[in-house]
Image (cartoon, rainbow, N blue to C red; front, side, top):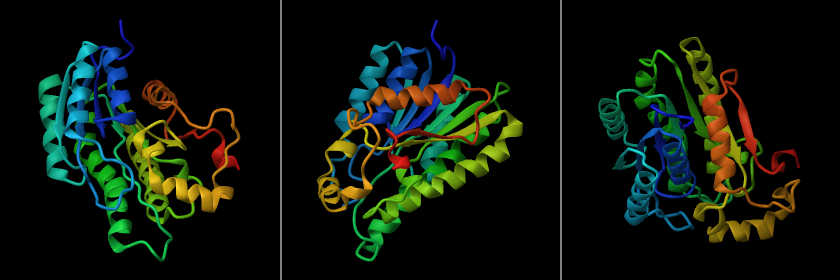
Length: 266
């Protein structure tokens, strides 16, 4: 018996990192997965390697190796028609939707007045507007579920504590808090809970292989400490554990769940 037997989860950004780990572990616990990822370059100003089509295919293989069923489609979360179609296709195939994990996002670096228009607009459009499109595409299906459901939005510690050289990223992640709080108030009476997760450094290519991040830490290091020097980087399972908790915690909605090694308190 798995913790999520017979349930269905919609996850964005499944090609690698957190999204892949969520998909694998939900499948291990008996859930069916509806997953999307651009699986290629989303913007030309990111300074970490993008996910690839091979990453995307590997996620499908890994989910199926756990005995899980998965409907995976390659596309951009900024495309509302695409997300609407995938959500409907997944519900038609699996019969229901129980949980949404809005995980996809991008990051760019630069001082507020030096960012290009594209650096600011692209990040807000993917992280904030794209997540709203995820909710718009999936909430109608959650509302049909008599058992209710959950939405977990991956924000960031930068959505709690603004960081230097991250104007567009911090703005988008602060915006996700407002989106989640509004949705939590609207959906609570419908038995759908909405929460945000706020990681700091995570063991992903976006988290650890970003050349601009290293330069920012050198120049702005006073803004980047945590309280757990012995545990500087969260594991993928640390994040999935939080997602699992929020998917099952019947008394928790509107929460802002920190997986940040205490960084937001420094």
